[in-house]
Image (cartoon, rainbow, N blue to C red; front, side):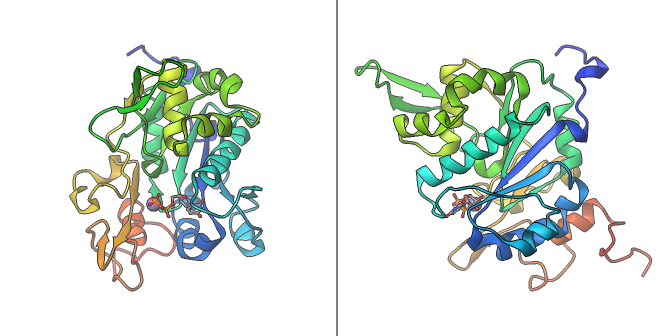
Length: 275
Ligand code: UDP
Ligand code: MN
């Protein structure tokens, strides 16, 4: 790749991080985020939700954005929130837009280091697909054909360079993101892939260090500090979480507190190593 000039090198301040959430998850999911990785990049991280919550907003230092989007898991509701996240980024002058879900832990330091490998003045769509083949959908302009494209799973997080986001603006800005989603009738992360890869010919660059709960978290063992995102989920009684020593499962069901102390052992509430 091209050597970076210092002007292009990403710093923490150059990144806009949005986290999609919903009122029903403010307590169960945001609490651990606000106590862990949010603390390391308080000025960069914004939460996009569907209802006011003064207490969460206070803990987020005023970074809870209440959208008018419905509080549902419907395609439209999720596209509505993604559109709000994208719009909010466009209104900043930041170099990178990174989206995550509220069941992600984001290692902000690893994210910044990764972004330093790329130039925000070029078109970049960075993320991790969760399907082994590109998605194929009927080409509605040309009924007998199919079109195929990769998309980054929203639940693993993805980033867009400012250059690409500005090219997306005519197609996806000012409320048009949702129209594209309506047209292809697919979820928000797929819509993003459709716009980046199909409409703007910017291929997804796969970043292996992004992880959604579609991957078994217990398999993430190598060099935790270079991984960018983690997640957790529950299938019946089976928890899909990182296997990591630290707090007990009751105190730390997501394992994110234990992860946080492993990555940042000197953090205020982490057990001191000497005792
Ligand atoms: N979400 C939302 N509204 C809902 C349900 C989910 O905004 O009614 C958000 C949720 O906060 C998360 C993302 O959508 O950031 C994905 O939801 P979840 O993790 O519950 O489901 P998944 O799609 O991962 O199975
Ligand atoms: Mn999820």
